[in-house]
Image (tube, rainbow, N blue to C red; front, side, top):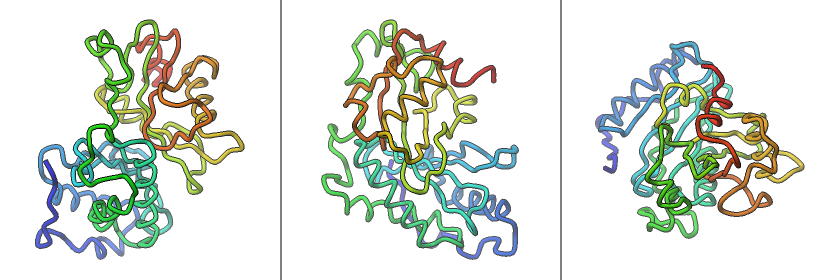
Length: 268
């Protein structure tokens, strides 16, 4: 269901752990957020820095924007003092997801130096209302529907992984792309989550700026990770010359989900 913001339940996040290290401040902020987003499925910590990971990754429901919409947030090691968080909105049209992700990043940049996650997430509905064509409760055609691009046979044989689905002799990958001037390196950003959780909704990718179009870069990244040529990576909606920001579906020709997942995750 929709999450509600209760002012009386909000700790003073701007004052959390100001004398501590960035890691300590992040841990205290995560504890506060878990207390605020306490409903079932509202908050999920995907990558925990206490386990030795360099970044914190968590996901919150954004049903105030659209049913099924979620926001995945990555806190780099230098947050909140030196680096800003990254956002990947999932469950919307690609163009809307990209715009909302950028708006969240801009809001966070305004608040750099302080623990800002609650304030940024609280602004979701307001930011979404400023995006043309995006209603706060999206119509069905505005939501990403992977099943619409797949055959009935494929849907019946969804398989083990939510983000890698068999389609005949091929595999459909669900990919969420984050791009923009602040992205410095092209990489898959949620490998730790994918290794632990087969039901992860998508493969998350950061795409750095390049002379090539974003989908060419995405095809090159996926091809190199899986061990196929760029020509064997096709996008179901739109060609490779279109922007990739937001959620995409990529068809990997001639590869089973088992082969694709094994190549991406390695032996881990």
